[in-house]
Length: 363
Picture 1: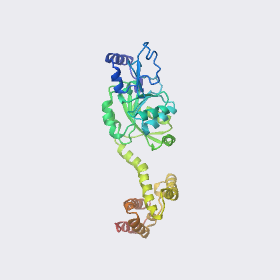
Picture 2: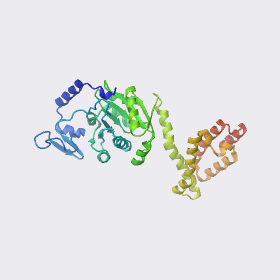
Picture 3: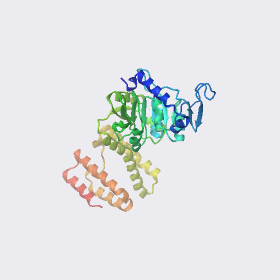
Picture 4: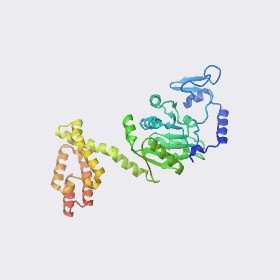
């Protein structure tokens, strides 16, 4: 059963009583960034027939907390709020909304990001502070930088029946422990996608791996969320997040570093970046296609598979003269190529030794 289906009516009533007793003032609401009526639709607003309203930038506030905590019916998807309206939070909000998943609120201290989020996700309530969002949703997604997760979790207080999830590729669900209360659940939801551009990221989500972890009941619903946006959920074992993320960084940033190295070496030919990519990127793409079709070991080509120590030595001399910053990258990758070629049986022991000697003979 979903965590958000487990909230008892008595608990909801008790919380509503606490909220009424608190009697927040308008200034308190403004300081917390609570948007109680973003579209100005509260009956009697500003007329004396109901709660009065006022606006702070894009955030509109009312004097009384008149809306109840969001609560979906059994079998329905939870009303979701996203903390962080940067590239990841925005892309997830748009993807979930387009998939029919209810996105009810967003929290960001950046007014421009709040405004952009609202342009792409209809009927969402904007908040300046994360804690102000909690009352409006059942599932809280923290799409913030890794270093911000621990202090943010310490500042949040969930109610029984709610769940909280972060999008970090490195940290485990345990970082959310300070935000938890009795009857809450926590997890992680990391799409293995580069969020450099909104529309490209949305397209990449279809078919992308989405790593999930957390409490058993919650994980099943995170898998449903992953599938709703077109992803393929993969559950990670506890303690495996750092290794998973290191491989992800090599898959993205590592490839960019390699392309930048190719660009540097190609500059010796008089090529600019566009020219270098036009010549060498098709070979990169072919190699990836070969690895997908044949496997990593079988896709390796080049001097390491032939034991061609003379070619390796010539490369090292050329790089030392024209692209010295590329030397350590080439040396590290050639050493790895030698290991792959040896593993697949492409090299004799003598050829392996010649290559390693050539690699060690050039500073």
